[in-house]
Length: 306
Image (cartoon, rainbow, N blue to C red; front, side, top):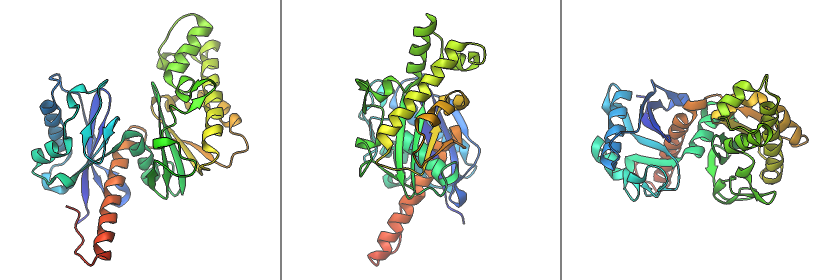
């Protein structure tokens, strides 16, 4: 039988879940719901269990679960250290809590960074398939990033910023996120037009509002210059752009490409979009299965992942 795993994408306001199948990292129906009104860890784990049960008709079909979580989070231990968002999860052992609800062993539940999940989804089943070296960016209120080599996320090594995060890399007297973020686009437009509008509104207005159009152009230019400074040593073959702002890529891609002119890399907009973190969670799970299996064989022990 084909192996499957429950995958989750924990967003700022919603949680999504699906069953991910090993062959091609195919996703079953995606089930989503807002965070529970009752702000407690028990209610949150209950929501995860409910969505997981809805995502698979056969609860026994899933070999475990992999969750794409924002940080700060101890992904190895399964413990949240977030205080500014989901504060009711602070210090909670989500691995044991969720495993208990499903009747699993704790080791059947895994976690990875949401930006890393996004990139792994695109590497495994999206725009970066076959790329030996890839970088992914999620463009929203801020900027998330992840680096991958041969299908594995790396957080250190030649050309990789600390933790694989670019948002706080020094740039032009500040940091990258000061000029590459939704906040930067909003601030740029406010400076030009004297009023504040949401990024989605600016994207819709750009064809007939020169100030909005130029805010996106400057965003692309700054993004490109920042990437030229931070990616040259890593030398990615593919750079994938995801997140809500990537839906308006046509407004900033020309300026971004001009700023990166001469670098041997390919810029691509994410193919899976909102489904990328779910597929990436599946990629992470099955890679871990393969690693444990290989270790078991090397040690002469029966291969087992749970």
